[in-house]
Length: 308
Image (cartoon, rainbow, N blue to C red; front, side, top):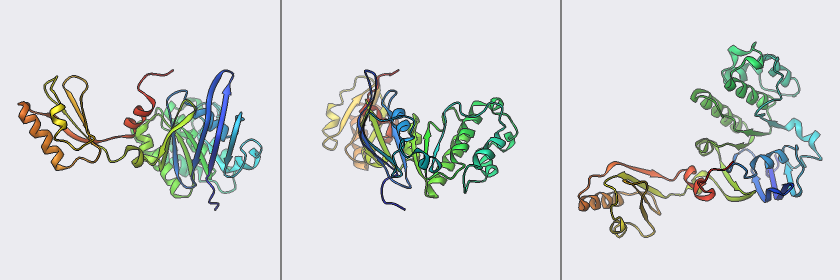
């Protein structure tokens, strides 16, 4: 197997009229890994993935997918990749099992359609027309069609959107099984827990460019957090003197206190917090120890304002 990355993007630019969708993005996805591409609405994720899939041409920059140009070499690339369609693409009258068998016939060494239907909880719906499947079942059939050919590289766009907890976990198990079998997966999702759970590497994009990249552990760091509830408007400045240098303490919202530390929480830190509360004559309620999540990092980098 080649040591070159499965996806190698350098200086990618794509505009739609005056709208700058992608502005010089560089991105690498290593073979045999799950790479999550995250960003708020309008960040350029979908455009980037569509260029990798060969559906759009870049205005500038280079894109190589499995070492090939996704537009010029599309005929050679198509049998080697899987693409999960968000909507459309499946005939409304096609029965789930028949459709998957037809899709499998296009590949030299497909997965067993019956096995895939069973893994995704669709075995009992094999004879049901697509239009009569529930939204979640349609979503899972789209995933089944994307993986049936044992792709070297799989593009998954919001694979668990609208799925219940059981279906979400079945999807996660299937995706991690594909990675264990050597497949490379590009995942775009708004479920940051999903990215944190599945991804080997995370790329966060905003305004068409990369703003952070690393493993989930690298992005979240070892920073610890202590949260508790108490009387509102306490002066936390005195608490900071008892905490490690670089710590932050704030009240937000009223009566809810957050302490952010430059390292993991240890017994000395917890003792300092409870001792300070005792000095204030307050009993900390709902005291808990947390660490930064990928969602915390994402919001710090991209902001909290709503986007259309």
